[in-house]
Length: 114
Image 1 (tube, rainbow, N blue to C red):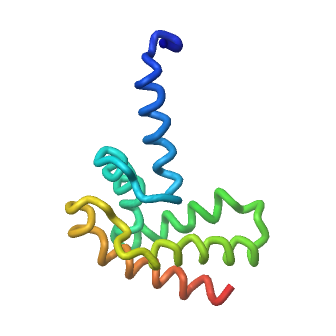
Image 2: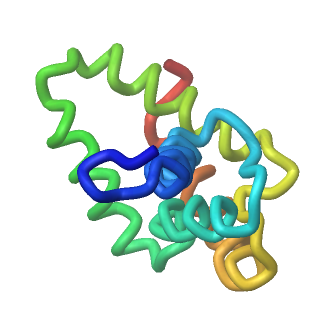
């Protein structure tokens, strides 16, 4: 079956890759793991880059009341900290995991207890 000149298997594969970035389940395939790690790499960036990202996230959700934003953002960040590993591939785990955990812990503390 084809859709707009694209094989349905390709459409299904692209869909599954995009859905992997929802981060609500472990990636099932190596290409999903790589894409998820690329998507999360900002978490393990140098602190100044991470804080710029956090400011950008807040700006994107400026319409959300501060208390609600802080509570939900804190939950999201804590969900990453609760994982045995944030990053799935060896490269990202070895190069980003430690800094990501530091950045996230600092952000959670900054957000307060909710």
